[in-house]
Image (cartoon, rainbow, N blue to C red):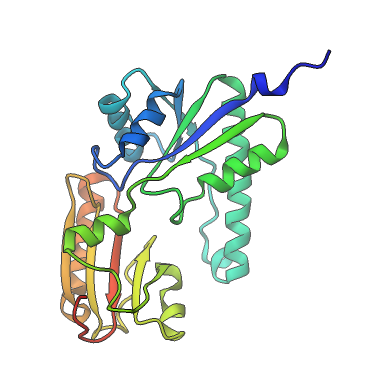
Length: 262
């Protein structure tokens, strides 16, 4: 008789944990962590501060759950490889494949249900679901994947600045710092920007900006105003946060001209 594959199916819970505050995780997210045998996290260096934050989160809300780190494969960030859209997608695809193989080895070596804590919400510019899908598609592990939504940096930014992210009857475009110029050139005039290697705002001096750095963390910093007036301050805050905390994650709303917040 063939074994029942369902009896070996393992639950993988992809859990949004908020943008940095230890209490931003939802009640549903806490329950998902506590129902897992262990949690898995990518480790990007020997002193990765975001791994420590995940450990602190588990200690606070699911103290019996151990965090298992997986050394993250190196990603090609050279300008020669990522200057074009096709080149960038190729680099990211290769990195996803390497990461999925590393995670698959970690899952194969350690049985039981696993939680994967995801910064913010798994639906916003995060690779976790794509990587878990790659593992499942290879078919060597029988996985049952569940997604638990989290509080995104977009929500926290809006709350901290007391904002509605769109004007009355308007739209909001969500993009990355890498593609900001592209969406502005296409006519977007109300844009939320995530994943910023820098602040490419020199040509947008007359736009309004509402910026947040390391939202939810002890180093949280907020700035709002005309881009041309506050850009040097924003850049100084980014460097300070990186130096003081070992990491910086920022998100901001840009609105063309002097439009009022709606």
